[in-house]
Image 1 (cartoon, rainbow, N blue to C red):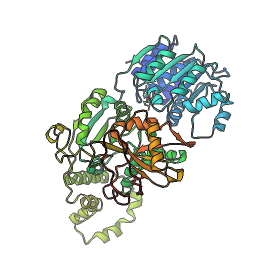
Image 2 (tube, rainbow, N blue to C red):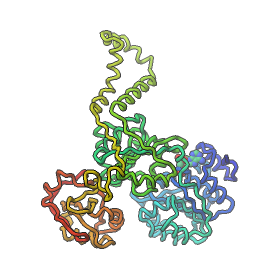
Image 3 (cartoon, protein in one colour):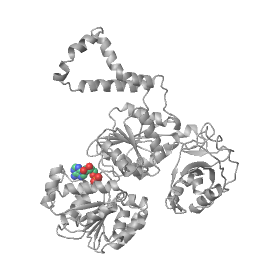
Image 4 (tube, helix red, strand yellow):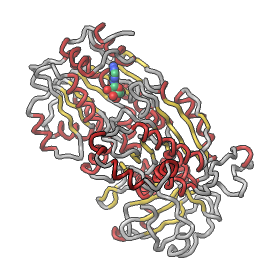
Length: 585
Ligand code: AMP
């Protein structure tokens, strides 16, 4: 095993690494130090979060950094504010003993004026999100004409977040002879194009598909019916009394809903999603870091860059569509040599997707059975007993109360005392799980489906998509931030959808127009296409936002909503107007 001391790194950096306890470089760090210390060159590193990539790109840059230079020498681009802050903090640690070397993190969602002021201090290293960085360049506040290093951190994420044009513009603005380091989980599609266009003779290093922690992460799943997902989540949490983890949801609406339910049910949890203000996000993250929250319910975007190392569990309330997103999610546990569990709550129809995820992570998922109520109660009971055994007793303080306590308890036998004291905690679980049914779905794809993929009830599985009884199309219901207030009517909504989607002939289901927002349904096959297309859509100057919504519940459908939608042929547009209630929002 190599040590940082084996490399000819600047002694001030060595000293800082010692101070923070980094002794052995991770594989990606070995690669970057080997290839970039003596002779800087372009590099592509296929490495994910958790591999130690921040130090991998920062250390060689800092080693070559010139403290007396008045212009930024390195520009590190990263997809989110949180990641920028995290990278900035890491660089501050690495430069603890390197006098005169400073970094500045620049990102949106906070006043640009402070960042402009910060630039006046002539930091050598700029860590920024593409949008804010480009903004500062265009305002001529950030001079990148002398940049010698450009890092594209989590390049795949930056592209998937729509930063491609910004990246191209920044890359064009920086000097040709700079060294570019591209870090990404994949090298496909547009990333390959960027690599081909902007990197010259890069050395390529691959740190496997797995991140360094993957060895310590086990992957498992529980199979339940859609209606039992939330109960399954609770059983998983109850069965793991020491849980400290993230519950990943697919949409903001779902995130809010699950976090609210967990809080109502007495769990220390909160939600992290894009609708929170920056101050609210910071507050939630701080509570989570301090472990005042045991469960953080989050969307993938919101959880990016969350720098918490000791997570015991990552729970996939719903599996992501993208396998790489799963890799990112599961890589949040099992870090820094600790073990972790990545758990997925699945429906039968998700089973066929597991194989793809297994290929991606190079490991098998273990199918697990949700514990019965009795098993959970037992687990909680013994966890409580363990807590009691491990509780520190403040002899001096408690002593004075002992005689009075003994007197109060004198009527009770030792056994009674024991039972009662255990019941304080235990009763809650006993009550909750009294008569709890088995919620495991043990059916397999084969034995329940006919050739058309229908289940034994003759219908297709329902999830967030909805299905009209008279059509073969599975619909996804979308929330859209436009409603009657914005002068939307069924026709203008149809026009907007048709004009925004690049595909022709997409079946449109129900349109439900409300005051400030609305819902519409699209053929589920076009869910991703719609999310992508609407990400760039504006309507009368307003940025349009759509999100996958919960399916309309049976009770509300056809109630205030008016008539049922009629039968329609493929490709024919259909919709229904009317009033309705906002579901789970
Ligand atoms: P990163 O992939 O840069 O986000 O790093 C993942 C985690 O590993 C961070 O908490 C780092 O502080 C930690 N880390 C990175 N490199 C090392 C190292 N060489 N030794 C110990 N911990 C490290």
